[in-house]
Image (cartoon, rainbow, N blue to C red; front, side, top):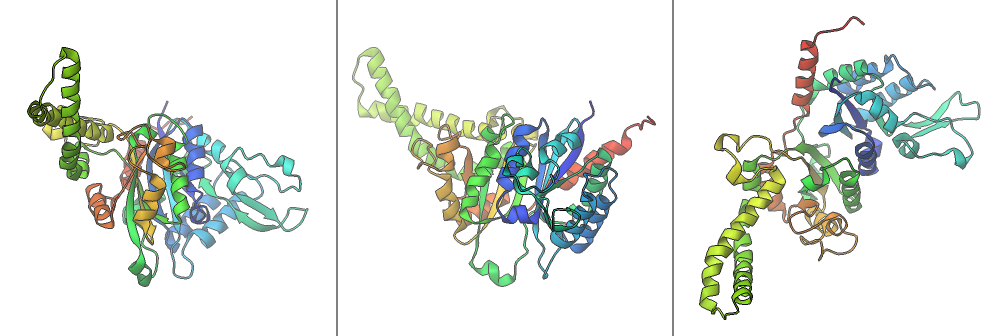
Amino acid sequence: MEQSLSYVLVTPYTVAKSRTGGVLSRLLSRISLELVGVQMIAMDQQIAQAYANVIKTRKKDEGFKISDLLSSYIEQSMGPSGGVRHRSLLLLFKGENPCEQLANVVGSFQKETKSVETVIGESIRDTYADLIFTDESQNEVRYFEPAVITAQTQEEADATLSLFNTWLGKQGNIIVNRPAEYYADVERTLVIIKPDNWKYASSRPGMIIDMFSRSGLRIVGIKVLKMSVNQALQFYGPTKDGLKAKLAPIYGMQARELLEHEFNVHLNAQLQDIMTTSFGDMYSEEQFERIVEFMAGIKPSDCKAEDLDMPGLVKCMVLVYEGKDAVQKIRTILGATDPNKAAAGTIRREFGSNIRVNAAHASDSAENAVREMGVLKAEENSCSSLIESYLATKDASPRSDS
């Protein structure tokens, strides 16, 4: 069947309340779609108004005049207020019948009731949204918070994506929406949710983001990335010599012990030094290649020179967090490199398997965060080009009159 593109937009209130991890967990674990793009956005009044108009004229309504409520909400809460543009989170999903799948997980709005037994909690809106009426007649709404917004039909999704396409291309990937004095006392740090969390559909990426939310920091940049071999080599390059210095003596000693045990002979320290500089160095180099392969899906030695800058074969998610003492706060929640040595309640203890497959990466200093953001081009996002490519394919496809 045809692979189509649709979206979920996480509202500023949901983002501000650090509920993005919970929303993402629901989506990733309950749909057969692929998350192909994600971007933190901050709407200006013009795009908010245009988006509100798309929702207001939708052909499929959810009842309770939801289209009108959503349209009004977008104008009032998703555009700027007090001169401040508010963060929303755009998620792009690709697959068969994306609008139907996403709408089922997002859910509809239920009538307000005094009985707690009717609170189901199956959908995102069951859990995070509010529709409160002024009285029992339920004719006038007192409070409305949709938590997330998604298209009801593919026609509506295409119209929204077309609207966003031109605007997104002019937006940076890192949100700057605070007064200049705010940035005098904040750090930015980089986080990677590693490929081991994306092997199959699961709530793990969302759960990791939810754990990072304990820091009280703001997500100001986010994107899906397939790291190229060159990016992985640059990113982990500074660790290569340290890795060799740390591992080569260990492998040299282990090689000596194995030979002594196998042949029942005593080998002197000089021979161990030789094995360290030969076998130990070689095996350390192999371990570095495995790190690159884990992050890019391809070993450097197996990659053709012309393919070094091509997107890799595995997916990760890159996030930029912002706030006071951001580096230390994130690394405390992340835990030690070795999951077996990480403190209880940390991400690596909960989700890591070994030193290499350890769920997530976080910058170890503000200076390294700057370097790592440069390597992974944190300022850039592919959402606009994804949408443009999809719309071009749609325009080129033969249309059916049925």
